[in-house]
Image 1 (cartoon, helix red, strand yellow):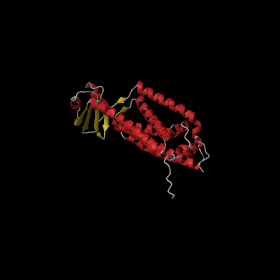
Image 2 (cartoon, rainbow, N blue to C red):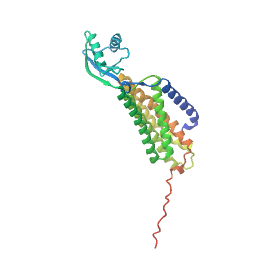
Image 3 (tube, rainbow, N blue to C red):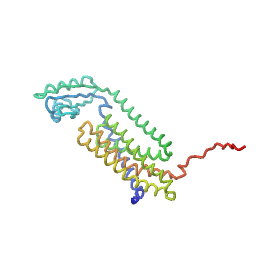
Image 4 (cartoon, rainbow, N blue to C red):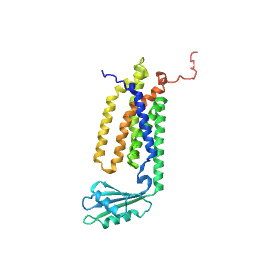
Length: 304
């Protein structure tokens, strides 16, 4: 028989860690701000292909010498393909940068495959719609859990998800990782992952209320979390291994997406134990909360 781990015995310490991480994340978001990508701020994207493998550092120095100091150069797909991102509102900027690179190409000239311009108004709309989509996802989760379990479970899950998003975004802000649409997709994926992890624990807590009738809420949570621990660890470790492969071998284009997912999976695993469950304790969940309300309709007497 698996020995029960006293997870809730250190819940006050975990609460202090949670407050510290959340406060630091919020401070970074408001003090340093987000490093918004061109998807949100607007700018120009240029895709280049070379005859021979391109040197990213050399291309960056060529752009700096040409006066484009804010250019971001990334490898893209094959070793002969590069992606250049430039802030600015001039639709002709992409063609000017491409011409500058073609002039200094030497024996490895660049060929422009595509030039895209994203206006700042479009970027602002994407940012607003992304935030709205995140709020709608949280609202839908709250309604689902309130009907699927009970409103106290819904509150615990939402607090846990908000923590995961704040910590992830705060760390990205602190290290000034570029926040583009791929990172936004990662944040939305984190919400789904963390929710799934939390529901597994909640479902076991609800089942154990029927089995462990004499156990207190804290004992129930400790037993339920211990019973689901192997499943949680297997899921988290396998997911982190896959994300690590993307992080180290996916290139610059997937770096923001991978690091956001990596942070989110760690935060989600932690919050499903030490935030969602602790909220249940604060709200004093009991077996009576899971009993369906009695019908108020009067029974009809069919006897003659």
